[in-house]
Image (cartoon, rainbow, N blue to C red; front, top):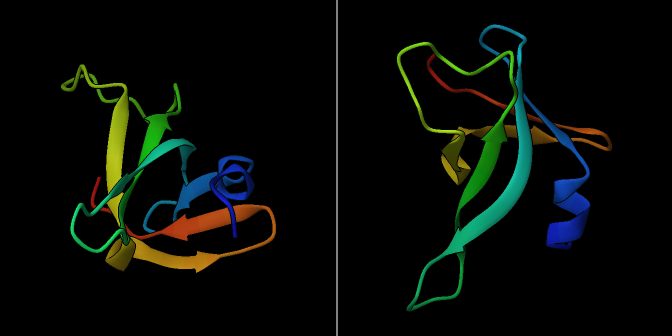
Length: 77
């Protein structure tokens, strides 16, 4: 799977069913080259009043399922 394939998918939190956003980048471990986190641009609906960051990092262990159209993640809100 390519990064461009992942970027076309919506990221949805299974805890509350809300759209988190879309993948804009990934972070990669320097020594192994393995993907470490997905960097997601937050959806306007997901942005918190208490946070001014427009992006969120999602670790691989937080990903529940990568489907055809959607990536399901489990993150605390």
